[in-house]
Image 1 (cartoon, protein in one colour):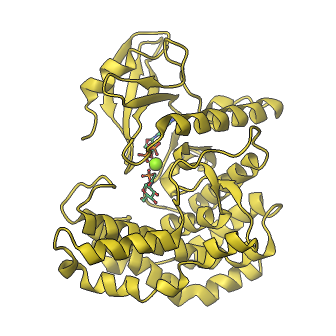
Image 2 (cartoon, rainbow, N blue to C red):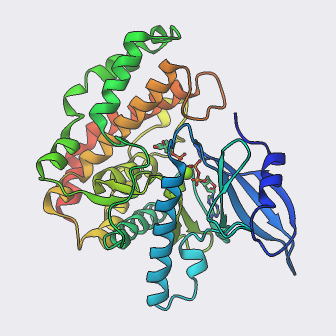
Length: 368
Ligand code: ADP
Ligand code: GN1
Ligand code: MG
């Protein structure tokens, strides 16, 4: 069950805001954590913070997750300081310590809570509105990968083992289908057929990571458009957020999730599938933005696979939505009964649209 605003208000008192907590209210449209906007007394206006209860059904080792987040935030701020940035408070997340000088609070039930400065004057968009937004988002995530390349302190913890192991995701889908615990498979016959017809491609990235033809990097792993805040005035990327899945991975899944979330004019859960389409100008903007910050470290093989990565992760996330639907909606937050099935349909429609346009997408990458 989600945390309530009253619970958040009680927990907020544990953090060292340096002022009286005025209110806490649910915030944002993330599918995983419980996020609250907290107002704290200040002059002339109250100050805003983001308080989150970490979903420990999804993240089974929240303390290790928070160690990762601490390291990533500290590294980002060290880099910004070294560069003499005067807007570091907007450019990287900052954890607010608890009264006990910890980076997170454990409540009586064992839930982990953490709190960040609210990034003012910037927005995370659920749906892309312009090529400029797509370009800015891709540039910001590319820069974030570049930043992580020299993260000190050894390998980060894997907060969700096998997170982007697409064959593992496929196997889980097959298992859920075989059991069909809620008798829902009959309602998703075309989607299941669509998934089964694409089994042969699920290993492309993980196989190449294993045999060394693709490099492992420290990546974000959840680069959907609303996980980067864009400046409300300039539309430039301001701050990469949602650091829970920052861990070793492939740059391709990061770029791919930008294709999934920033090329279609439709929402992730759009029910009118006619609206779902991969728009080439948006893809071109993503490639431009991403290469502007990632060209220096990408290998030729990574660059070559950028279009395919968009297809692969859109398929992977579609599979995850479909699996969650079959398993009875235990993972992603839903707002209506068939929400996960609607999301799966949207992803698969986008996969089909990408498949039709792969030659044109490859041509864009080749000339970039
Ligand atoms: P989830 O894992 O559930 O997606 P996120 O960390 O992405 O959680 O947070 C959910 C939403 O809250 C984001 O999409 C964003 O709109 C908002 N948000 C999160 N952190 C901040 C922040 N520091 N400043 C402003 N908005 C934020
Ligand atoms: C979740 O946390 P959020 O809402 O940014 C999910 C991603 C999916 C995404 C689909 C930890 O992202 O993997 O791609 O939903 N995060 C986790 O919208 O599973
Ligand atoms: Mg998020």
